[in-house]
Amino acid sequence: MERANFGSKLGIVLASAGSAVGLGNIWRFPCEAGENGGAAFILIYILCVAFLGVPVMVCEFVIGRRSQANTGRAYSVLAPGTQWKWVGLNGVMAAFLILGYYGVVSGWTLGYMIASATGGLSGDMDYARFFYDFSGNSWQPVACMVAFITLTHVVVVRGVKEGIERFSKVMMPVLLLIVCVLAVCSFSMPGAAAGLDFLLRPDFGKVDAGVVVDAMGQAFFSMSVGMGCLSTYASYFSRDASLMRTAGGVAVIDTCVAVLAGIIIFPAVFSVSGIETDAGPGLVFVTLPNVFRLAFSSAPVAGQVFSLMFYVLLVLAALTSSISLHEVSTAYLHERFAMSRKKAATIVTVFCILTGTVCALSFGPLNGVRLGGLTIFDLFDFVTAKLMLPLGGMFIAIFTGWKLDRSVVRDELTGGGRLYVPFFNSFIFILKYVAPVAIASIFVNEILK
Ligand code: PFF
Image (cartoon, rainbow, N blue to C red; front, top):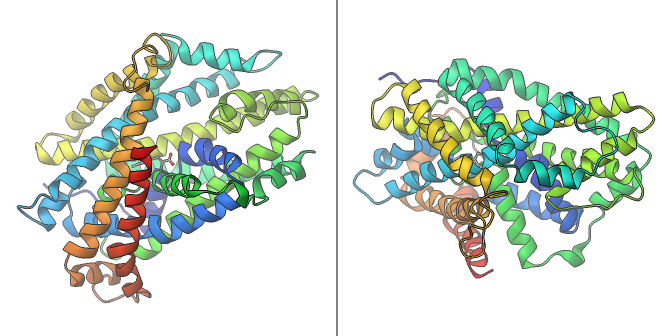
């Protein structure tokens, strides 16, 4: 079977950045930064991105492109007959499970985008109640999740070049444009200075081991590393793409969007006095609609446009990420069982809708079902983002640092000797020692928490 490929280097960067830029940047990052010391958190986050996220991303690229296989098979190609195959299978499982609950929050963003477009989010209303009623409803969030996963399916089924690459090449520039427009608008609001101060003033008093661990976990999630998502994409990279540069480019785009999301959100929030600042997850679904209404009370149409643009941004970001999650399982089934791409994608979609439905209902009718005190949604989040992902990242670093032949790693990074790669030895040192120890600390911390 001939392997699919991305058609251009731009397509490679935009598809990978599409995977990285997602709800993690716009929904989770501003909350985390707001709660954990503003610029102090941002600084630690950037260190985690540079010294852990980028190296592990490069490993995924090496593994994917070298093996020319989906992540579920890549380790059997590079280390045949060993137990390393479980790292790949862990990735396939994690990506599948994440898609279930990611689809739920993405579905909410779709619901909010539609409500914003149809005027359902304007006027004097209790937004906390609205969110509570919407997310706890027994059919609306399920319908939104199904619609969202179906959109994802439509892109994935078209294939790597015609579906994923084409969609990323059109949507990523749109997404980046919306981010810039919203940041400029928010910047010019009356409370911009106070909002920026809240976000950018470093409060090192709030930094403790837990915050460092959070920053590390957030960096992994945001950069989509740890589950072979980018390794699957890299199996479609051309031989002449520079893996280091691509990883650097993706990291820069991902981090800029996260910081800009904070710059969009906090000045807007601070322009409206008397509003309770919820820096937690309610920020995007409760505080912000309120802000949009109050900040634009004299120009409601402008408020509606701002709000619509914001939710379109969220939907696009979520979609490019969910496509990459879907691709992990689709590529696995497609290649492992030699079935058509369409059949593989359909199976993944159907099963994701099933897991997504259970997760969506855990905010409503299934809220009472708890395991270890966690709702089903929280359990999915915990098991995947907090356990499977860091573990995956750790073993990916160990595999590349200790098991893969050094000449293979060098050959991939230099593109067969064509490219100059600075810091090669430091890179290997990070993979062998720094990353495993640092990631193991996230893991232990999460288990003990
Ligand atoms: N990076 C995405 C985000 O920030 O929302 C989430 C994600 C996508 C995580 C793909 C993992 C992944 F493999």
